[in-house]
Amino acid sequence: MKRKLILVLACMLILSTALMTGCGDSGNQGVDNGGGGGDGATTYNVGVSIYKFDDNFMTLYRQEIESYFSSLETADVKYNVTIVDGNGDMATQTAQVDTFIAQGMDVMIINLVQSSSADVITQKAAAADIPVVYINREPSAEDMAAWDKICYVGADARQSGTYQGEIIANLPDGGDADGDGVVRYVMIMGDPENVDAQYRTEFSIKALKDAGIEVEKLFEQRGDWEQAKGQELAATALAQFGDKVDVIFCNNDGMALGAYQAIVAAGRTVGEDIYLVGVDALAEAVDMVHDGRMTGTVLNDHIGQSHRAVDAAVKYLDDNSNETYIWVNYQKVV
Image (tube, rainbow, N blue to C red; front, side):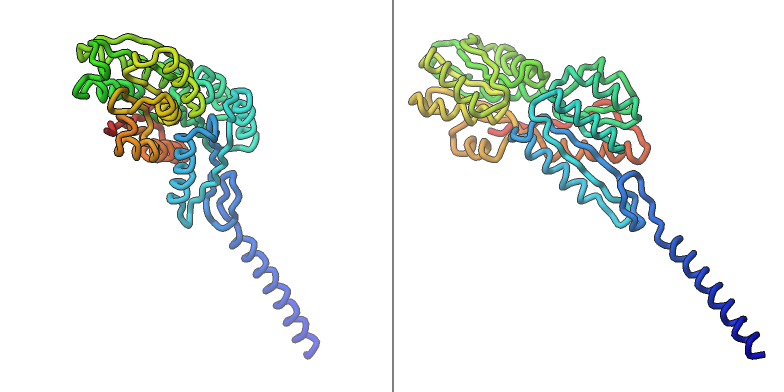
């Protein structure tokens, strides 16, 4: 009898251990959508490529992307965000996209080095069925129609150019600093291939002409969005044309900050004998507008754009579609 009791107890212990082991395995299983986790949360992998990390505006933009993704996390949803530097080189960025695809990213946010290369990125993404949110540098309409899982988040650069021109046109002298009846200007462009640079260049001058102001272009060169090049080009133009220069238009604030240094070095004074406008409303530029060292800038809303880009990416992750174009308005800062 005693032996039977021992056998029964042994069998019960074995059965109990087996049941506990089975329950333990089941209870530790988490939902893992390509990103790991194992804590019960769905983890999404997000690949972000920025055309160049040392761009002032895109530095703010990418930091806000990361911050906003973090703010959206819950106990049930996590975002594993990888942000890489395209370093201003399209081949580097294309390789980064290939890596994102190999890593099984669930969605990509791409700030193109070259807008004309959107078709290559889209083809790669479509083949891997990974949605793409393009930001800041607008692909062509043809490229945007190539697939139904791509969208563009940005601001209409025609509006920013128009606002630059209106800032000058609305001055008491209409931008004619020397009072000779003609607004003679210097244009420091970003990358001429970039649609933002094209539109800001075109529409700033169009706004002056639409206001009935006679204009004359003295100098137009590409500064590639860089402060040092903005300073160099403005110094060259001022040395060549001297007091004839009424206005210096810059496609972004980075180049405008450089142009201001050249203006000071040339013995000119913004608001008295020359005017200076930019785009982006960087904190330093806004301070300069407020104390008169810049005539004006145009707010390129990095917070609004980055949040809309993240929202679009999340919609793709939730298997929803997006509008092809998602616009965020510019604002004048004077």
